[in-house]
Picture 1 (cartoon, rainbow, N blue to C red):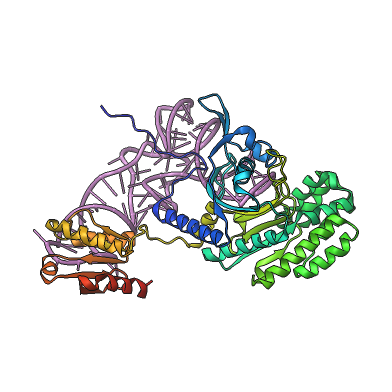
Picture 2: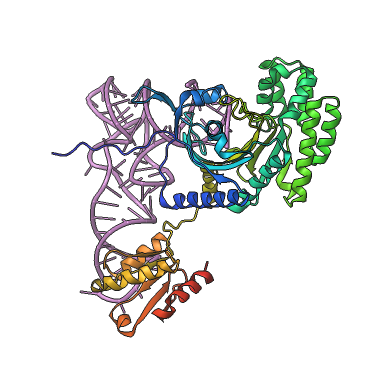
Length: 444
RNA sequence: GUGACUGUAGCUCAGUUGGUUAGAGCACCAGAUUGUGGAUCUGGGGGUCGCGGGUUCAAGUCCCGUCAGUCACCCCA
């Protein structure tokens, strides 16, 4: 009688994390929390599941189609959140009196989208959001740029580029060209400029959006301005003269670039890109996208923007805000192709081998002693051959092995083996902790 | 959601016009080495050829479906 086995499998777009990538993922989350907190953002959390009406219609038609939606056992129409911004809008409206404004929060959590998968595109993935709501101030937009920058450099990236634009500038142009009623289509086409080039966008504008050839040309001349941000802004200003919307957008961008540079953000990492539009319907002002120079195909790994009315569907109180989101799993997919994921699958640098089965008491005590000193330590569970235990230590990526048998116990000392250097030393217990610290520092 | 390509051991792959018991390297386990890892040698375990159906005397190989991955579109983190 054999039990029928269940095939172990995960759903399309849903993945397991083994220790090495899981540790990389946790490390990035730690960095994100640290950077967000350094700017004063507070953590919040919200449920994975929401009433469907809370989520529907907030991110545009496309996100509605991608909802994981079902009826729960109580007959409620529910759905898994597809981002963290819409639940935040609900949260803000619901708790406005408790949180007060301006309010800055960060939120690290999984979201779900029922779309087709690809490398770096999954149906379940973690976003690391941060937002500032309750202020229109451009200072918040500028700070958002600084956070994105500091976050990526803290994670360990040098070669990335933050592309910035402002919807007001685009809207101003569309107003001038008489295309305001077709803005969604125009912006969608424009957003593909980097991918399909000028001719592709031109064709899409004329065919799908039904612009005239002249309008399409003007949109593209506008979007393809190149040069330093200041040069582009000067040109934009000329082109948008007399249009209040566009002029405001230009002014805000001008201040953003000036202040960011003044604050020490390397100018080569921030680009003014008039073609980026972002699909999400709720953006109204500054928009951000971040690309890895060595893996642009993976797409934006940190995007966001300003919205002028986050919670309008939940409250009559107007809540403007600005924020962005790091796509953790997408970033991790890129890091994997770069070989940036460390091989070690243990978070502990120290393994205490179990040499003599009758001295479990001593191995257990010394393990605890090291932990109390802040040194992550694993005590091997079985008294197998030392060779086996060292092999295990090597494979898992431990840095040091602590070894003691009858000779060491008689002499009151511990052997410490440095697995990388291959060297071994012997110290009395009183010096053990300092010795281990020194070894870890010297070879890290 | 649409289209294309791919799917053989944990991983990377081989497998001749369909033709017996499906192979290699690496990894894994054991031993050489009952007080010391990475190397070497010896031996070993592991595959319903993603899954289901069809064609055929015969299917890893051909056809259909399905699941999964990748790529493009769409959209986006």
